[in-house]
Amino acid sequence: MAARSFDMIVIGAGPGGYVCAIRAAQLGLNVAIVERENLGGICLNWGCIPTKALLRSAEVFHLMHRAKEFGLKANGIGYDLDAVVKRSRGVARQLSSGVAHLMKKNKVTVVMGEAKLAGPGRVSVTSDKGAEELEARAIVVATGARARELPGLEADGDLVWTYRHALQPGRMPKKLLVIGSGAIGIEFASFFNTLGADTTVVEVMERILPVEDAEVSAFAKKQFLKQGMKILEQATVKKLDRAGGKVTAHVETGGRTETMEFDTVISAVGIVGNVEGLGLEDAGVKIDRSHVVTDAFCRTGVEGLFAIGDVAGAPWLAHKASHEGVMVAELIAGGHPHPIKPGSIAGCTYCQPQVASVGLTEAKAKEKGYEVKVGRFPFIGNGKAIALGEAEGFVKTVFDAKTGELLGAHMVGAEVTELIQGYVVGRMLETTEAELMETVFPHPTLSEMMHESVLDAYGRAIHF
Image 1 (cartoon, rainbow, N blue to C red):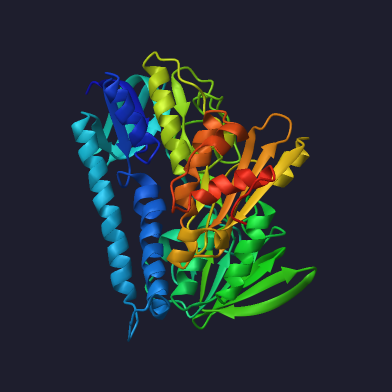
Image 2 (tube, rainbow, N blue to C red):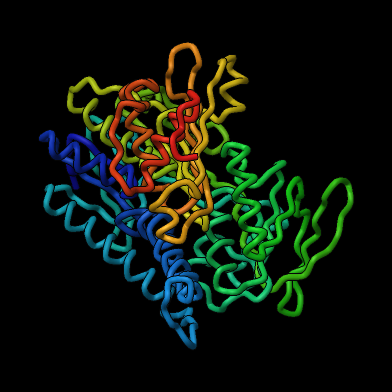
């Protein structure tokens, strides 16, 4: 049977792959996309979206307990974990089916099955229906990543969970250990802690949320402790003993090892790229620590072969993957797109309080030799934040003292994940402090804190 021929084949239908396929189709290319599990990939089905649905339930639950503050009455407050999970899975299914509709609308051929490179410009796909070959002048690898599992800490789906198990919990943990305090770990810690689990977070680095600005990490830690979480920093879980429906964690801190007992453990110690079984190394692709090595335009160095998203390395963010997908599609179609600027990609963590950032932290800016001006503005100085009952948090901005360039912005507090994009646009447009100061921010909004933080960097803050 002759191979089906296309202009481009995308392997993986996550937020990088399906967006790449759509953009290529818009540009007139005949596109096939191969997916082994669910359209929408990890993000829509087992990551970004269903976790936000769970966290929204936890947020509403938290607000219900605060009803009296708002002059309201709420009695008999409780939750149904199965119903919370059912809603989350329903949201994921809705968006996955939406991707299927987009594939059909854009005339992208969807091929379900396991893909493997079968030679230059060729992909073999194996499924329950058998095997077939596809061919194209360009192939885009967008296979994503999965949870990293460390020796002795492997998930079993019963006592020790990965994010997949945590998204469909068979029970509510009573005493929970979360290993790792990056975005995934802290979001699950926040969700289960809000619903009543006795939650302990262990972080190997010197502080939680280690990629964030130190002030943001410190403020977030303070809030988590107030909410009842226990946090161990510069600590390592050496092993887990499982017996009698319990897990005994051996935790090393400062050279001392102590044991702690839990009924549930969530391992959130990073990710590894899905590079196995694709024939990448046989094709001449370089792999570095489970990720495909690419240039700024996601080219692998092998003619006609590209890699985007999590499988191509940091930052491991869905929006980075999608933008790479658009860039690669335009490149393959003969365009001249600009490469991604990693320093202008925002990171967001949807715990309570939310955390968002873009660009350099104050410490990184100084490390790079910049003379900086730093501005800060607290939520307590903002009318909308007080009206919302969300007066905890702050916005921090870091500028190059010589040029006025916005080097970085860092936020912690209510809805900051919705605010950060203003600073992202500013960085992309190479905005200086002068333009930001002269911009009129609407009142009353949380965004006014963004303006005030800029003003504060130059000694001009009005409301604090």
